Length: 461
Image 1 (cartoon, rainbow, N blue to C red):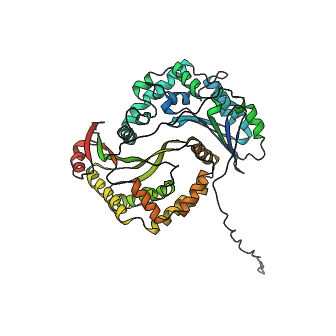
Image 2: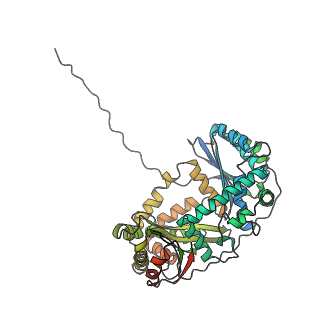
Image 3: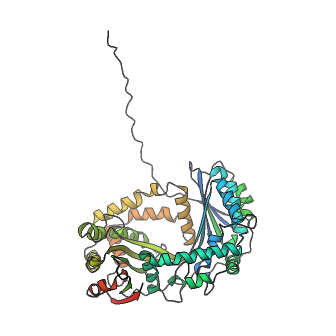
């Protein structure tokens, strides 16, 4: 038997193509006849379309004693209309393969829709129906109020949520809406009824002060015609934009312990108020904050997690609270949790990290790693239409230009080590931080007092 000889022909190994520069997608902007502002962004290949509606119904517009009415209204927008009961409306959305959600925050109410491109006309008609003719049935509002009241004790029991609530109370004057829980308290939510929800809707929800962001593969879709038949048919009167109240805060260095007897961990939340995205320092502040506590290899994690083993992780971040045309404020904070016996040592080491940063600055290697992580992952971060739509809607509610995010990545890449150091040191001055600790006061109060990082007080949990 003769062995057959097989001749194999090898093709040359394909070479990688040249890397193409990436930039955050630029939207188109126009205004419909009813006054609704529309941002559209064509993303080839994105067959799931994301829609974000921003309604200029901020929390500071809630009537006195009705904190939480914006949240109840937002939830009610997805709970049926004058044409469809709650069950029918949910079934119609399901037949479209769509998801619809809504929530309220300090700038206003956001309504989020995701739907396959082929079902976009029907889904937008359902969305327009919810915006133009929500039912606000007594029974539905009562149910939503009960649900919200049930959530509040769970939030109080959550150490991270409890710390956030206390920090807002400490930083801002009691007369400011931003000092109080976003979704209301048991007292204020319990006072909400269908009449209050409808009054808030009628006072603040209208196309003339709303913006729709639509992102997906729109190239083969007559979006103008679809909008004319759906969101464009939503009517309402005009109104002047509400002025954005100034944000004042007291960042006098101090410590507040929220007592949780027997707690085996202490929740840390250390913060103050600083500049928002309108400020030129924002890019450097983002970069410096990332070096301080943005990832597992940041300074805080290297010391508190890797070297000392106090925690599973500590993060530093900046979160915009409220912005107006001329700027606003952001929360600058450090958060994490440590085991109870090591609360004092962990805080001591955290302050040593801040002081060393101020004395010696960041290194070029830290800056380079942060740029690679923040700028390099952006193409992956914005792969989905929903991520792009959410960021564009953030820009709208913060009064930022449409090309802001693209310009931010360019500024991050250009920011030097010295500039990033100055920004993060200014953001987290060791003597101007309000520290909230949710933990066992009997075990942690004296060790914390010994650190001399500010006056220490104890409140009930």
